[in-house]
Amino acid sequence: MVAQIAGLKFMQGLWQRFVSSLTPGVRCALAIWTLFYLTDGALGFFHIASLSDWVGMTGPAVRHGQIWRLVTYGLLPANIMDLLANGISVVVFGSMLERLWRPRDFLLYCAIATVGAGLAKLALQPSSLIPLLGPSPVAFALMAATGRLLAHETILVPPSLQLTMRQAVILLAALSFILIASMAGWVNAIIRVSGGGFGLLYLWLRSAIGQPRSARPIASQRINRLEL
Image (cartoon, rainbow, N blue to C red; front, side, top):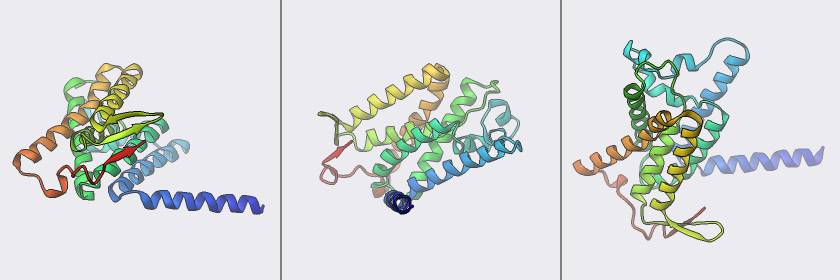
């Protein structure tokens, strides 16, 4: 009994340290995805409804005036693996980006990536009734922003491979794209990766019209090397 209590306190302390180490925007994104996922699970368990019917994005629904679905689909992970994989991505890449951005800049960027992928869904699958769900467009957008703003920082990949951030992001994005394409098809993979494309377009536009200091790439002295 004593050992169980000690173990519980240890896990509680570990969890508290993890949560406190998260940046505000990352913490907000994780909380929203987890809340929506658990709510959907609870509604399904009691056979009340499916949250995806209300927030999932399809072309016909948007054309009938349900514009909110361009954003809300990204709030509900499609499954537990979707939550975990994209949760890890937002922790890793989002934490790096919030060294450069304010929380509201971070969340705005996530929203733009989500809407962008929703528009790609509308263009490529205008009549499909299979809903788009999950924050994977945000994960691709965060990878894209990290590759652009921290392009020349280096990371050490075990056991001894050293890559620039741009190289690491391209490799990870390519692997993720292939994995999604193998499971959901090439069109669905393109829709999700388009979140990264819209994110890069937004960053380019900000740079072109004069971006705030908080969105400028940081000097290499601030992050000499990142280790994964």
